[in-house]
Image: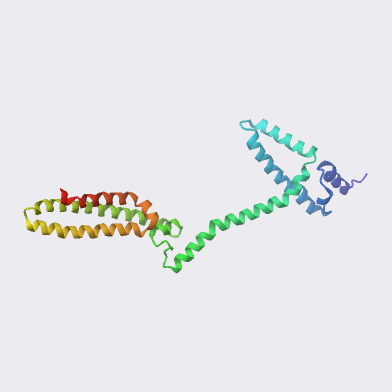
Amino acid sequence: MAINFDELWEQFLYEFLKVDYSHVTGDFMQDFIWIVFMPSIVLLFYMDFVLARVSGDAKGGMKHLITIGIFVYILTQGLYGVFVGLTKPFFGLIVIIGVILMMVKHIPDILVRDRGNTRGGRSSGGGLLSSVAAGGAGGYALRSIGREKKRIDDQLKELENMVDESIRLHKRGEKDNEAKMNAISLDNTIEMRIANIENKIDFEGPLGKGVFGNHEKELERITRKWQKRMKV
């Protein structure tokens, strides 16, 4: 007795999987892909999602048993057709999400690079830190920040030494005119040094305030110390 493959296939679809007639095209390859293969992926995804939240600390054997139970329940209750209907929207949604994620990840970097090229390699923020935040300067900029922080550290130490010297000269200037003139000259230099460091921190914008925040506080402390020199 010859086996009628078409009848077996129809029995499999309509009686075993309980698929609705509207999903069947009559083309074996199309029906196999969109009724058997692709919906099985969606079903496996669903069962994995459910198991992760239901099985908890259950061991491997128990998880397999739960998986089989869910699969049998879906088949016997005629729910497999639901997954067949969800298959195309499911994969369509994955494709859309993938495109959106790709755009979110790569397009800002491309725009930053283009903007950097048109502005001499700097982003619109104007400072070294702005280019790092935008992803346009990379590791080189990070190393540059480290060197800049070291330079500001050295400048602050030198500035405090100058303030201490100014305080000593002002004390001596009460009796020595030459010391007083030297103190005034040194004060002018200190004022320019303070303005220079302030401008450097301000030039980097809000990000500069964050990275150089400790330097800003140290500068304020030294400045207050210098402004009190006449009271010493």
